[in-house]
Image (cartoon, rainbow, N blue to C red; front, side, top):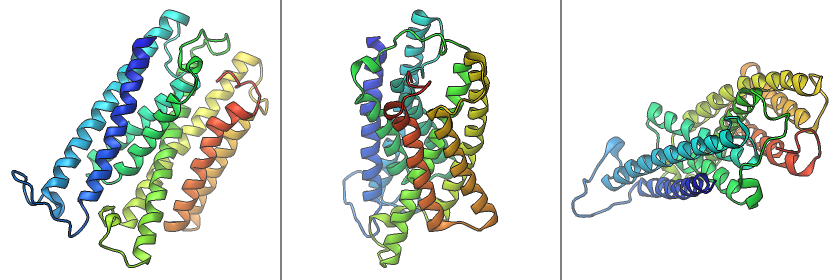
Length: 303
């Protein structure tokens, strides 16, 4: 048990270091900011300073290393759960679920960075992954340990329903972070500030498109997760739907993002409205994930 907790603690500090490095990268890319450090090149890709290039490279390495440690932590916890309950599922309580969401967010970001070569987004997306891991670490110790599973959870359904649903939450978290990034960038441009820190961010169209793609990953995954959850409920409790608070809020979240997809495709919702809606949707995800578990009683209270 202590081995997995040690690895989770390492993950927290590595993600914090990665976040600091990405923030430093954004600061170092400010137009007009000059560095004259011996042994460092004067320019890097896309005209950025050599110092910014160095920080960006280290930030990516630390992020990947943190993700690897996060993976090892989840695998170690999975082994501990296997020994305890016979179920290999390292997302069986709130702490483990938050650690898995953090893992999925960071994985999504790393794939995004390798695909689009945009490191400045890390200051937001890696930040959300760090916050998720930090929120997990704030839970009382009894919630961080691998207790025996109740019979309803000790099922093969936990492998697919929970992992798919949590992965959709990670995609929505990325979209929410990109929405915040969009609003900050737009505000700076409206004020005519095109040479400050925010000038290092991608253009508004790129941020908007990436946020949309993240939601288009999360939306069908959440639908699939709800369907799998209904099948699990029928297996465990004898009914597909019982209007349990968790079920109801999951459906509400899906409808919220369904409205976003509809407005985007049929009403031309882009830019500022889409960014605000993505942030609102992510806040609803947070309530569904945290608020329902701790504020509302129901069949999912053990989560």
